[in-house]
Every structure is written in C-alpha cells, then in structure tokens.
Length: 158
Image (cartoon, rainbow, N blue to C red):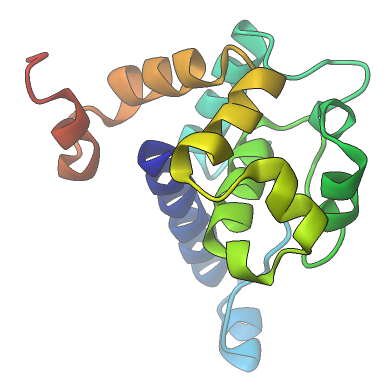
C-alpha cells in the first residue's frame, strides 16, 4: 500500500510542478496548481510510462475503464472531490491513495467495504485489480529503483 501512495505522491508533485512551470500566473493566482489529471501529459514521461505499464498488464478494462470494476458505494466517492480519468492507471492509483489518505472522511458503507486495516484495504483493490501490484512493481523497478524513496522496498535486490 505504501509504495502505491509513494508513486501517486511523486506523480502528483511532478504534475503540480509542471503546471507551475508551464503556467506560473495560474499557479500564483490560485496558490496551487490545477488538480485535473492528465494521463497523457507530454511533460510527464513517468505518468505516461505508468499508464503504458497499466495497459500492458490489462489493469483497466479498455472499453469500460477502471471505475466499472468498483462497488457502487465507491463510485459515489469517485465523483466527490476531483475528476479522475477512467482510462488512466495513474488515476486509479491516485484514487486508491486519496481514499486511503481520507479514510476517516469516508461514509460508513465504504469503510465497511474496505475494512479498517491496511491489509483489508489493499485486499479490496487487489481483488478488483489482480495485476495491480505486478504493474506497480514493474514500474518501480524500471523507472524509480534509483530513487531512495523506492529503493528501500528493494534493498536486497541490487
């Protein structure tokens, strides 16, 4: 679960930094960058690469998108705070991270569905997306293994 949060945080930081660099007026006038996701952003090769790996492992149903694999109570949560692209693996990871980070704010039916431990939380998503961790692992090993935040998870693999 932690590595998913770390990846999503890294991509979020890079996306917000890119938005500030590309549009300093917007970033300074609002005090923060745009939260809209753009999985195909040319300025963000990591995000693009992660989405390619998600496609390779068929994490997302290409005709229906990843939200269709979620239970109805989570679909309601999907639309509450931000817009997610249903065809982007990066947005699935963001959704997982955001639900984990804001667990206390979730309605009781969602909490009951996800359980109250890290293990039950990630188990829900692994049952819905069985190749999720394989894709995450490939992404980290191929693109982020030199980053100290991620290398700690692979300490004996070097």
